[in-house]
Length: 424
Ligand SMILES: NC(=O)c1ccc[n+]([C@@H]2O[C@H](COP(=O)([O-])OP(=O)(O)OC[C@H]3O[C@@H](n4cnc5c(N)ncnc54)[C@H](O)[C@@H]3O)[C@@H](O)[C@H]2O)c1
Image (cartoon, rainbow, N blue to C red):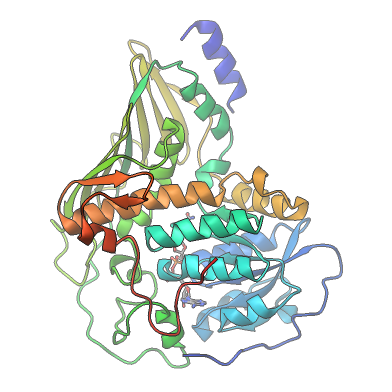
């Protein structure tokens, strides 16, 4: 890279429930603000409540929904307009409310795409947390629904809204580091064991049947519940679908690739000896025609890799680019590393969503759902590879693995009666 182009770059980067409706949700807001509803009021749903309610020029959080009444009250009570906020335990009441224009979904993964597609069919715009689906087929249908009904569906992969990230990707794809042959998505952090939890009664007042939804019925345990559901195949996607989605999304974006031709995955539990079903150690190689994308995960070490937070490294002929949560570092071979812009910005991802809703412009979304579907698919493929234990070859036309019935079965799931996946 010439001194001139580097300067230019550095300069430019920078079973059904009863509705808990407590007040009249159909009362119009005093201004033109978008009436938004948050579905799932846990850790991240609390974030949605807080951050969307701060976008006072664009929207107001008019309704909150959770099957756990304690969490519902906790999050709704904190809102600036808490006395006017509608509160539900059944998201379908939100979908029935024509005054609600947009919803955000921060439930466990097994609910994401089902609620999102139903919301699109009900005429709503959707901000759906990552990973947008619990399996490949759900994501494909969600992307199709958004396109068919021209709705704004934003994915919670907020690196896409990070400061200067579009410039960083342009720089990468402009050939300044030579040809990029490899990107490594790294997820190294410590996640403690969860122990073993016996079957017990769900907490009082919780609608556990509606929490389970499409998943098979299983007795309640404190591990198959708030947050720890991530580590059970019935509800979660492991840490590749949790934190890994962010890094895989950035790696795929930077490489400019979609679905891979071949996937080799290995993984298992080298550290946990408890209720965990998903791996604590996972390596996946995604093969594309001109490059490889590698995902590397270990959950039993400090939250750092060679001094950086977890992130992505792009390796080119003439140098490398590291992208982390707090920014990017460019190193040309033989030169000192230089810190540049980039990083992740959840507030901007939400603002961009609301601006697109207001302007009815799905094409201006920073993290459109088709990209979300593709990135979530790589996570699912990495898990399928581990579960079937062999290399997978993907047929891009049939959208199926070649000659692998076991792997193809895992591209979708069995939906519990009464919680079938909607058709588009
Ligand atoms: N974008 C990000 O950086 C980011 C960060 C954290 C979490 N997340 C995502 O957000 C999602 C939620 O994560 P979390 O840590 O808050 O989990 P959590 O378990 O703490 O919260 C999920 C909440 O959803 C509720 N819920 C379950 N089924 C429901 C239903 N049918 N209707 C309404 N509410 C229902 C649960 O009772 C719970 O309160 C996950 O998919 C996670 O991957 C994204």
